[in-house]
Image 1 (tube, one colour):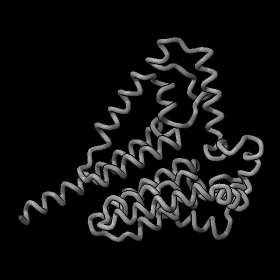
Image 2 (cartoon, helix red, strand yellow):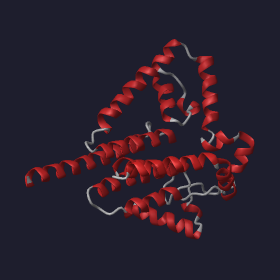
Image 3 (tube, one colour):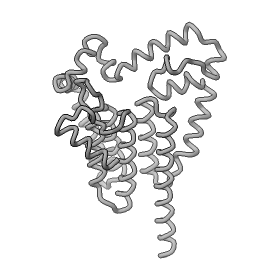
Image 4 (cartoon, helix red, strand yellow):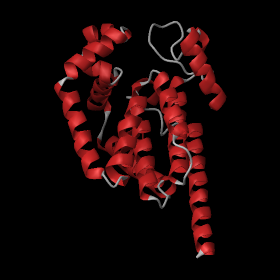
Amino acid sequence: MIINSFLIIIGLIFDVNIFSSFPGSSRFGYSGLFTKSGESVLLYLLLIVYFYAKFLKGKSILPVIYFILIAILSGKKIALLIIPLLFTIHFCLRSKYKVYFSIIGLFIISIIIFFKRAILDFLFNSFPFWEKILIEKGIWAVITSTRNLNLLKTQTFVENNWSFVNYIFGGVDYNNSKIEIDPLDLFMFFGFVGGIFYLLFLTKNFLILENKYLKILIIGFLVLGMLYGAFLFNIILMSIVFLVILNIQSEEEKVKNRVKTES
């Protein structure tokens, strides 16, 4: 991942098409040697979580900042959401000045809402790839990367084909009817019953850290992954997430045992 991050920077500086997230496209983004830019950005977001856990134990914050920049260079909008997540945890929850930072956060949100049109115009002028979709499909198609259109298509499928049993156990041709928003796809694939059991499985096996700030960060990361789509069904990616969580938990146990020994 570290070596690949250097390739992402090289791709940006020299505009190397093979390192682009969208080869042959005018859309901005670089993912190095990853063939799937979606997996790339989620793995780099996971690295941010990992190094932030290290930071809480006294390590440098620089790897966190570095991999935030690398994730943003992927060109995926989901990478931008890691910034407010970390801001909320680090400044609004952990800091002794959290009241002031919370006010600053609310002020920033208000500014973004008030100037949203100007901000969107700036982004569309900077990244003209989205302008065509804006004109043809509308603003929500840009924000959701056309997932809102997938939702409407799937809604029509459900209305025309589902019976009561499908709402309980699901039933859909996932490859042709996926929405690419995991909570909704989870319901479509497993129904209410299967979806609830799947989420209980995640809660039991992924939310195992004792540090409440890291637990919130893991929850935030899982939410970002689910919003991005094709996350819960990606066996390799979910396995890596689980292994990283186990690693962080192991570090927590070492610190706890060290404190007991010293006391």
